Image (cartoon, rainbow, N blue to C red; front, side, top):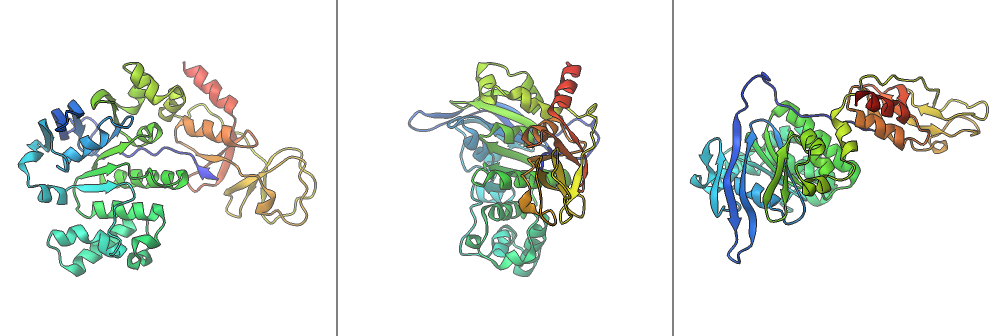
Length: 379
């Protein structure tokens, strides 16, 4: 059972402060020699310390736009400004060493250990080998990897671990700007959610300016402070907060792209005020079940964390075991948006969404009917 929550990354500071512009696209076009236009007159500003997500169908110029920031692609016309300076005025290798860059499958050097992969940028910046490796070890801990993985090679890691190493290597430049090109698309959904949570945790602490490319609307909504929806041909269709894009798509293309279930996604921006918790019968693992159950019973471990559901009319010989249980669906962490509560209720075999505290201990349950009633009251 996994928490279903949306933790928003935000940089600190006075909310009344006028946001600084970290990156600006000013009438940027990329046209290739064969006449193909990958990006068409793109203009937008990306605020300092925020996550901006480029999202759209294949061929809409998401990656091309991202790669123009670090000059891996040169614009045909217009300007890409980084802290007010045209990136074309910077030497490309120097510019790239000062910008973190994470790609799909991490792009690690297969012949170097994990520690040496992360130490690459500090070494290129003139650090001594010992100091660079110490910094690399610190960054592995920052992204949640154990120190013993530092001596392994990329092929010896899981996909999720390789992506964390890629993030650590990007952070090694200690740059305020981090570019991420579909970094989590090659891993399974569970690992992907963990990596998204880790990115938001890091962002809440580090306050980087992150430009993130994805084709997944849910990922864009979950991660972005701002979302730029691009249409085929490289034109900007809409740029705004996830809530603005979901609730008020500017045209049929955006409405179609974000999906017919955008109302459900919009629950990510509603709090759960008014949803009252119900009590639920629990049974601890290892304890005897004296008679057949009449209703669903929630099994918990010795710490009070949920492990699954015991179906009605179940009989158990001896102590309750994990094998006696039905998987319980997602969990809803108290204080997070309403979408998680509805998902927990709908995914539960008992029709009861399990609500947990910050330590993932059970504190009650909710039903889908309760959540729908709250939504109706707010209309």
